[in-house]
Image 1: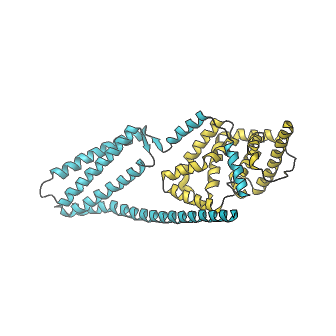
Image 2 (image 1 turned 180 degrees about the vertical axis):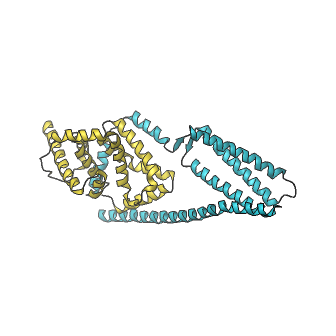
Length: 186
Length: 194
């Protein structure tokens, strides 16, 4: 979750962006580029698409920053724009992939431990690619740790309860993929 | 817990492998994010406004220099200022046309500023010269028309200044708040270490 310092920083950054300060925009990109790319890459089919979506996202941010009313909601706003931009081209495919994934998804195992060790990051990154697009998306937002559960619900445009249950199943699925990998290596 | 979580997130994000060629292409496109290509109607708009800038510069410059000796000094200065504005506008137009693109961050602001400046100079000029016209009715009409432009321009300037100073104050307060939060985090971390 975001700390006080990060919240104040976001507000300060938004104010400078609204003032049309170019260095503030460069700062915004530096601060968010990797995280947004990581998120977008998890929901679009290819890397090239992810770069395109990211570029379009920045264009929309530049044009729309004046309309951002709640200065503290920068993170939610950025993720929403990135998601909308990605889905504006792949909405149908996203739905199709979500439907297809649902039938052969690995659920059923209970998530035992809620946190993942830093050393697991590489394995988790690989395992995310084997999850359904919906589980991958909610887990990515959870792992990136920029948003509260309410904000994740806002980005995904689903009720809070759905986010919680989706996250629970996503963690179970992730555990399952990870233990399958462990079994394969043993 | 937070440190561990941050470390996990950082490592996760860094696990993403990117293709250098694709990233380079993205970065090249990002460099032009503030650039709006000038083509079609926009190009003709810039050509027209540049020509107008040159025309104003020549016209006002000529009047400022060649006006008869009894012409009021204030009026002469006003025309000279108008000629300078025309020149500045023409320079801006030529710069944009030569680049083939408009920098949204600088050129837009410059154009807006010059537009405002020209309006104020011309209106002031009309107000100064109006009372000196031999035909009083024409003079009064000239002043009235000038006021129609000058009053909204002045109002716009006042509101803009208020908004800017509010923004700057809020910005400064947030910067202080941010530095304090940074300091508080640092103190907490040091306390945790000891």
